[in-house]
Image (cartoon, rainbow, N blue to C red; front, side):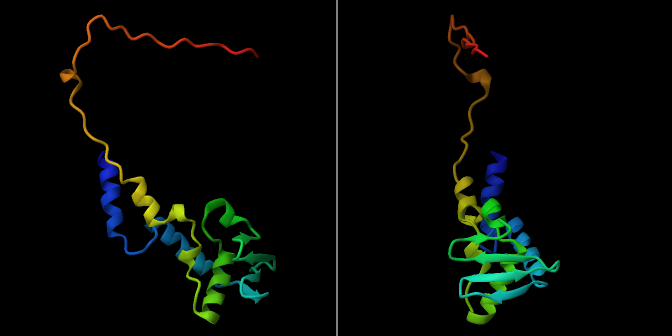
Length: 144
């Protein structure tokens, strides 16, 4: 109960649409993406050259990225952040928060901790049921 209440109240103080851990991760990825070279294919596709000379393809229409980080974690990787900052510089759109999976945002967090766990009375105040014996369930063993 305490943890649910604490998390429910702390998320009202967040200044962004992202939980602090996700926000810090995005900021870190932005910094790591600054060393990448971004090449335009069109408005939605980019080729990224990392610091090791490896090429990565980013496609914002289908949320597919060469390294697979977004598909696995719901967060962009440093390659995506490089292309997002490049795209934002040229057309003034595409905030990184738009591409974070919905389950990692503040709304999903608040929905998770919205239900209240109601307190119950002490066990000593429960009604006693006479002649009631708790019997374990029958376990059936399977072949093999």
